Image 1 (cartoon, rainbow, N blue to C red):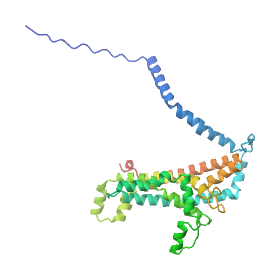
Image 2 (image 1 turned 90 degrees about the horizontal axis):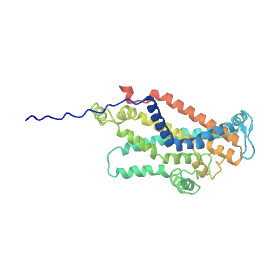
Image 3 (image 1 turned 135 degrees about the horizontal axis):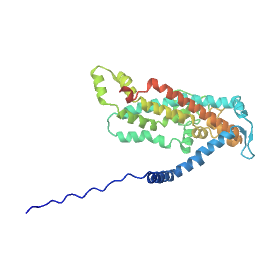
Image 4 (image 1 turned 90 degrees about the vertical axis):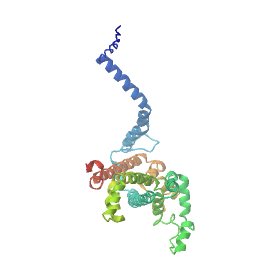
Length: 318
């Protein structure tokens, strides 16, 4: 007897989707995507794009929050450039950015280099050094910082014990800005973590080969570590520079809401707040805000332009 094996059934014929059905399916998918994005779109239009457009209009008006805006053209900008206190705020902010940002990044990189080495209690040290970044921007820390740098406080007593009789930093126009610099440097935890992640990506074979060739620690750091973490360094420089331009809370609290003494802590945003909410010159404050945006955009553009000279990506080596 001969057994006949059943042949497999024919595969169903796959027909191409009709253009009209394909278009309807694409519309449904787009609609679903826009539906999921709608909360973000609404928030962006109502809380970001809308206020930005309004502030751009107010920048060319005389507006005091109580009366209708009156169009005055570029008068706010002209008045701003001839305002001595505005010039002082630019000077104070520039000094804070130039001094505070490099010191913060140097300390963050130094601590990251130490924590990148295997040692006992490494997790504890990482958490301890990162903790100030979580609480440093709070108002309570600002009050504590003001108390630390006041007359006859711990900083003043320590200086006197070491032979430096400068008095409290908070009440001295020559020193109060450096207390703000010390506060921002103390919050080095966030860039430290980013540096640490970059250091973990550097191949150990490069250090071993350099050590065999007789390169010392400084040569290995300069010729291997810095080029390999240059993208991370660029990211931290860009981010911390932008954050430094936006300083407000610490200066406002440490100066006891005066931005003083003698305008020594009159950072740009503090003067903007005084003009907008204390003197009700919202048009002038809006013009100041847009000048700050242009300044940050210019600094960002310069940093991106300069990265071609000192930032090395893996794609460039291929």
